[in-house]
Image (spheres, rainbow, N blue to C red):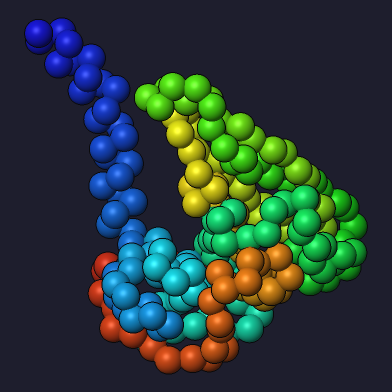
Length: 207
């Protein structure tokens, strides 16, 4: 039993430590759009309830200003909020997806969506569809858009768990306008209202 306990500790302790550290980097407060309580890494990202973008500014969460570029892909949406990837329209063709400058190189990001499941309820097989979406980059930027597909081979997945994240607030907004499902994309008030927030002692600001 002791050996089993040690093995379990070795496997799960690093994960627990990662979660604890990540929790300390979150800023908590009210979404500026729906007023639900949110917790965002470094005080920037999107509300899990309504999908609206938010940034911690002057002691509260507010809608980001146009032109904001986060230090990491902070503005997230899930595939359930979007049209099927095969029907996506291009965004900023010939321009960098981070800053909007003329692109000098292109990149195709792989998008895998869930079409359904087959097999036993406990260990289903996921039916997926893969598309590639074109991105442009200038010489100064990379990692402007990321896609996350939930891990695990034999667990049921949904498109709500498949996340697409962006660094540029402007690109994020235009992507949603072009490729969001009707009724699923939150309206945006640029420079909108604020909500109360609780911030850790130090948190880097995006710029």
